[in-house]
Image (cartoon, rainbow, N blue to C red; front, side):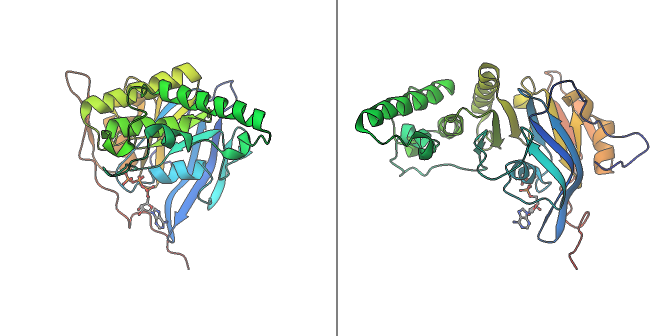
Length: 288
Ligand SMILES: Nc1ncnc2c1ncn2[C@@H]1O[C@H](COP(=O)(O)OP(=O)(O)OP(=O)(O)O)[C@@H](O)[C@H]1O
């Protein structure tokens, strides 16, 4: 992590538990540009982390690096003690901005079913196949119930609201009973009521299953009561800590290297004033 002043940005506190995700001095370059560097992050099992920051800061990039979908330019990332790698079944992933058009007739239940990897269920004999089918159906139903989607899981997904679709996509990520849920802006384009509903479902799943949650969001407010810590990505670096440690005038001004004001509304909502958009040129490092 970059030290941009004499007093450092909040850093993750170390605890006795072994971390489920460990990021050490990591950097990612895309298109010849350093997106972030010197990132250190230690995530404990069952933690609920919000990944925040302006557009283009590198929030999705952080999730993708943990998923092993992007190579690191420096440092290391381990998940359950093993190097981050593509296809890791301990992580359930919902990518950014997925939604279904009105004419998609596939049932929600079938969408959830797609989250199961057939290889795990490849039993050859007819008797075993019947047992397999019952087990698969039970797994799918379990995930649907976890997100509270039983009432509409058998309707065509294109007919469902954004919030209902989002719940079923989370169920698809849950169906393999992952230890980590990586959700890229699951609250994006939902109205406030649905944001709170989906956020509540994710918090409940985390508590019931013990899953670690990494949730990319633009606004911390709908998830403020659920999050343990926030990871604030800006200006090619990150600040990590409890919301009241990180989302402060002092820390964000230091992170952005420009005056930022953080206000608390009377209802407890956090308002960040003066947050600049990411300047692509700020941390550009052209490849030679
Ligand atoms: N494959 C790529 N090649 C080059 N640049 C890329 C690539 N993928 C992403 N980028 C750039 O990396 C930066 C970080 O992207 P990322 O999607 O991680 O941002 P973000 O913080 O998730 O943004 P948003 O809030 O808008 O979704 C952006 O400037 C983006 O244009």
